[in-house]
Length: 296
Image 1: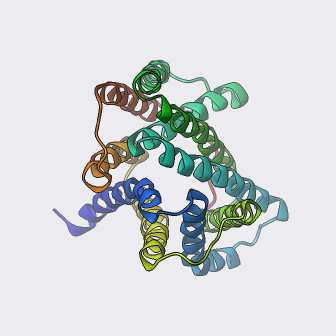
Image 2 (image 1 turned 120 degrees about the vertical axis):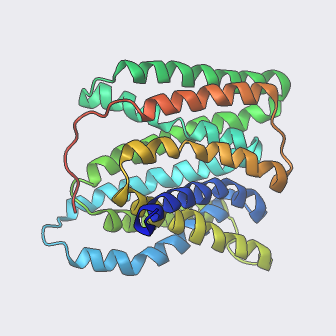
Image 3 (image 1 turned 180 degrees about the horizontal axis):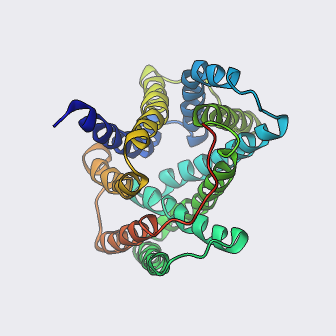
């Protein structure tokens, strides 16, 4: 097979792996999730800076109002990563990642209610599967592992913020190109998380070398590497290929958590997880509604 045809698929697989590792990094850092997510975003923002500045200089029709989109998206992303980070510390990594990834459901529902994009029947079937599976996962933990329920609920809460980021980004990308937008949004996320750490009294220094290496890996691999990989893949592959493939992320996270974190998969988690993944697949492969063109 031609090398140019293989690279996009390798980039897509690299993105899935990079994002799958992000929740594991939060556990491995042995620091507050607020601190780990701050370093993740701050390091990635530094990596994006030269590309973002170069892209920004090329903008001739940029208005100050356009900057509100990445700033708002950054705030939503900060709340998403904070709640998701704490959920990882309170429940299984597999549960936290799975429940955070139901965000596309809320995106589609808001698009229907606010922007009048009527979902297809495939979406509604996916919604039923996802909600049923999530109920099984939550119900199983409530009955068998009550202490994990708080983490599960935080993961669901994080999915709302994640969906908000998606919705704001969809509008913001109409007026800003990808790299400019992501650079500004990532920087905004880092600023909000920095403020949260300072207000809550979290220390940003004094950690062992291993912890700083995990911070670095989270920023370079999961955030910067994951972003560049998905952008490259989307530049060569259709969304119909990329979107369903991303569903592998929670699956790979659950598998990696077994040898790395010593987690186990339980019957209720397996059954509910499979149903949720099937639902997300149906939602992600539902016929898309017409949308405005994004900026170059």
